[in-house]
Image (cartoon, rainbow, N blue to C red; front, top):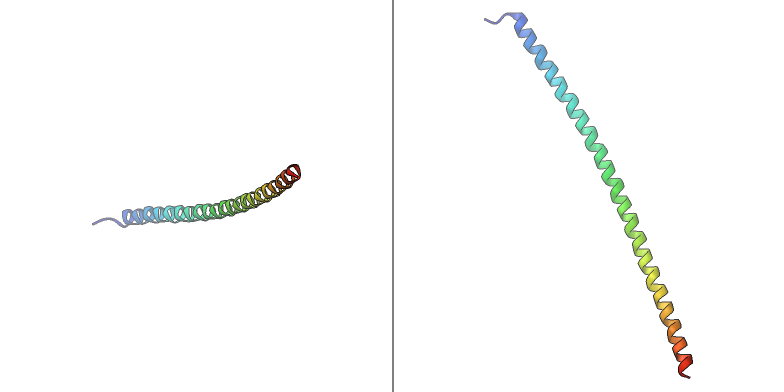
Length: 80
């Protein structure tokens, strides 16, 4: 029969290991939350850059259209 001291030591070791697992889980949960927050920030940044790129493309198209119109007017003047 195991003596009570040995049993108590085993329980102490088990309690320590359980505490380590609980702490590791909490740490991983916090890291996961931090990573999810970072993902959200990066997604927002990507969206902002996509919006800026779309506005730039729209502006470029508008400028190109105005230049084409001016060229057309100039060509019309030179043909007269």
